[in-house]
Length: 114
Image 1 (cartoon, rainbow, N blue to C red):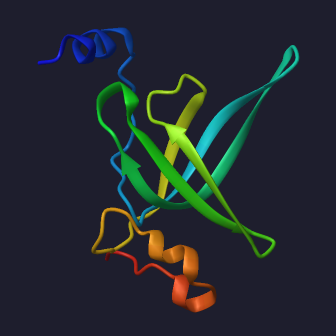
Image 2 (spheres, rainbow, N blue to C red):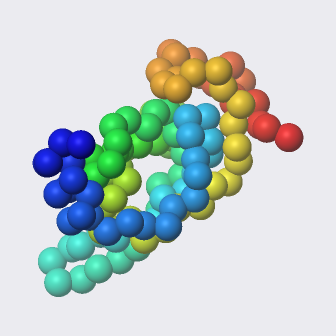
Image 3 (cartoon, rainbow, N blue to C red):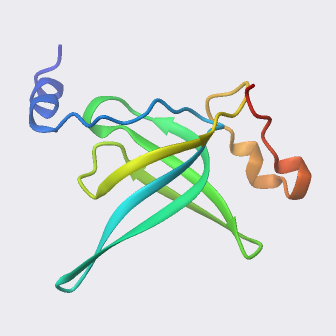
């Protein structure tokens, strides 16, 4: 095993996160620091991708807010993430569903796993 990967795994805290993948609809609760104050904000949307492994793993969430699409990338091991809730399990055939960027309305829906 690579020595840098071993050290990075030892330094990062292992969080108990639910299992999710591309196509799932999730809500991420994360901490925002504004000066000396802290508050919790949530970001709800569809997971487009999970990328990387170990300490450098990230995931991208996409939502549509007032007809404007917003994407946000979160590191999995970020200390600012408080919790993640899985709202719906989606059924997709790809690991990275970038094709959603070109779709709007009913075509941009993801089927739910029953």
